[in-house]
Image (cartoon, rainbow, N blue to C red; front, top):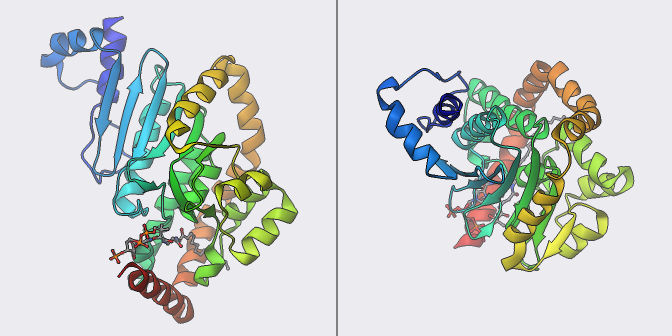
Length: 308
Ligand SMILES: CCCCCCCCCC/C=C\CC(=O)SCCNC(=O)CCNC(=O)[C@H](O)C(C)(C)COP(=O)(O)OP(=O)(O)OC[C@H]1O[C@@H](n2cnc3c(N)ncnc32)[C@H](O)[C@@H]1OP(=O)(O)O
């Protein structure tokens, strides 16, 4: 028992921020064994935090709450994406964790999507690496065997919406100021095929086509109407609803639910895995076009002007 706890604890030790997805040892820190064991036995919660992600795992329920914490808008830069993938992988291999609630620590924003500055004025190698990190985040989240619930406590455009769409269930706060959707065309860019696939799976072909072509951002109630989210609840009920829904989902045997989830999601995952390198090459050649760089720069300027 103690040995198992020790291994789990060591798996969950804080990694240095900005690290890579390299394996982390389970045989470190032998000298601390006794104190770690005692600490663990007396506590039902474990927490770990990187620069842009914090995780609290409740060992009693087996539910982790993962928060994005990159003010002002939780835009997804390379470091956040990498930390996200590492933390999710840690939870994935932790037997004590069966479900993850994904939410934001930044008021009024779930995530503003990909960090546009990662896609502007850099070189091709950078774009390639960045896109690989975006893919990795998605493969880990969409491919997770755990129950994943998005507790959307703020606006969630583009890549933020993709994150929410990749979860098993979406709960959004009832606030007209919050919007959610894949608005890429409004930036003058195209959502890649796997973004398109996932929104089509969630809301159906007709709604997805309209939504993607027009780059639509929906209020919570409109998002509910088209099935982009599953529930709209009062702002102060988002987390408690997420916990209640999670508890319901966790009443099912993991084995049956996981195989079913995998059956449903495998075709989309396989498509990206098979075409991963081509997708990166495609992204790099697309994003380095002068016209695309110009569109993104103009969009950033517009955002900055609006903020002044
Ligand atoms: C042939 C086919 C090939 C296909 C190839 C693929 C092509 C590429 C696919 C790319 C896929 C995904 C794209 C994305 O995810 S792009 C990101 C899109 N996101 C958005 O449009 C959201 C933009 N932001 C907002 O609408 C608002 O900021 C907000 C989230 C609603 C919050 O509003 P706010 O009033 O609270 O804050 P605001 O003043 O606007 O912003 C504060 C500062 O944050 C900066 N900022 C906002 N969003 C981003 C972002 N996504 N990246 C970087 N920086 C961002 C904003 O500029 C402000 O900065 P400053 O304080 O003025 O310096």
